[in-house]
Amino acid sequence: MNMAENQAQQWADYNRKEKTMTTKEELLQLLKDGVINYNEEQVKEAATKAVELGYPALEMIMDGLAAGMEVVGELYEKNEYFVPEVLMCADALYAGLDILRPHVPKQESGVVAQVVIGTVQGDVHDIGKNLVKMMFDVAGWQVHDLGRDVPLEKFVEEQLRTDAEVVAMSAMMTTTMLGMKKVIKMIKEKNPNVAIMLGGAPVTKDVAKLFGADGYAESAGNAVQEAIKMIGRLREYQKTGAEALSQ
Ligand code: B12
Image 1 (cartoon, rainbow, N blue to C red):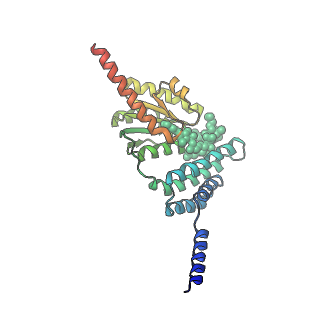
Image 2 (cartoon, rainbow, N blue to C red):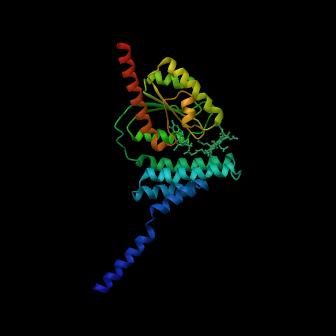
Image 3 (cartoon, rainbow, N blue to C red):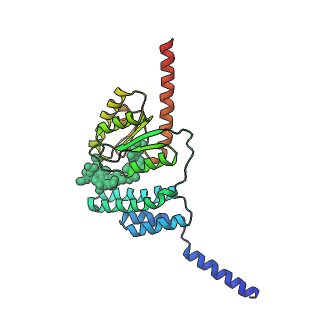
């Protein structure tokens, strides 16, 4: 092969590679659109491709799958989607999560503890809760997942059984959110040294405070950091409390 032929070959190889190589942005869009259009096959293909190409799995989950579900929420609010469509969107999201989740790298969080997590009684929304669970998992925490629609007493029982430092509750409805307050009261009565954090769309920092929780995070991205801060505050409080008593 002479030099001109060699260059032509290299150019052809480059063009072929360009065509088959999908960019990160394209895959994020495919994941997002796949969730919005409840296209499970598209989501699976895009997720598999993202893994093959080594794109960051966490970014694919948050900026692709979860971002798609945000749009689904807007469509539901505008009455363009109803429960059956939303359910299919959730199925598509979970299909992608199954593929991407094992590729989220472990992260050093500095503190490793146990967390009991679940969505409160009467509430079947578990996508957000599962993303928070994943963040604790990758941070190396031991996670006791109670699932969704969890009877309120179950949080208390599981905390006592495992002696977990943190209990994290999710609620997506204004009605079910009230159950959190009951759980906080029950847990604090039995064991005041547990740090309780709340989250979910209707929950705010003020609501969490009003309910007597120790912490709140508005997204899965900062849940672990907030949990670590909560543990720190609680330990500090125990220390100063004990010092005050001994004086
Ligand atoms: C998907 C969905 C469903 C799916 C749930 C599938 C599943 N497996 O989860 C299905 C179709 C089953 C469903 C059913 C219903 N739904 Co719905 N649903 C939604 C929707 C569209 C998206 C929720 C979601 O997954 N978002 C994506 C995730 C990633 O976000 P997220 O959940 O907010 O979680 C993030 C944060 O909040 C936070 N977070 C969440 N939990 C926690 C916990 C902790 C500890 C921390 C720190 C952080 C944290 O981190 C997450 C990730 O960053 C919302 C609309 C919306 N805008 O939220 C309505 C919505 C929640 N649903 C609603 C309603 C009314 C219902 C139904 C009653 C409808 C009906 N007529 O049957 C039923 C309820 C059934 C029941 N008993 O629970 C209402 C609730 C209204 C209210 N304020 O009370 C909403 C807000 C829609 C609306 N605007 O009316 N729903």
